[in-house]
Image (tube, rainbow, N blue to C red; front, side, top):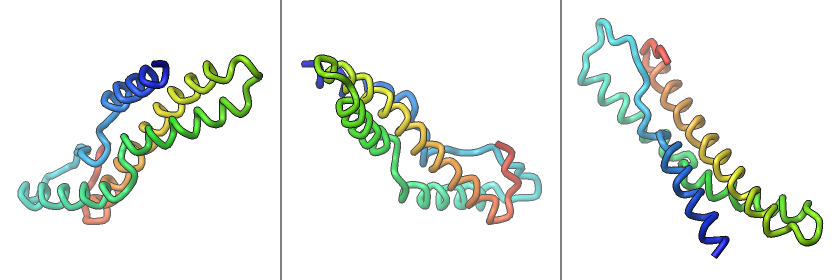
Length: 118
């Protein structure tokens, strides 16, 4: 039952954090064709999708956090520590994956000559 609860919490947190490969940065589009910008953005998002997405990052972080905390905690506290490690690892993994995908999109657009503002 506790594992199901932890998985549910991680799923909810991942859903809240997910932007990742769907991210659209603010771009100074003066003198740029809006259709070309839209196509370039879509192509850059496709590159970003090749990286770990938020759900995969959350799952990997949750597993690593649970195992680490269970291994380091004293006897009698392993389940509680594993739960806390899973939650913290899940949130951290999702955030890291999103940041990586957003950075890929920003760099891709900048490499195509756009002035990315955020």
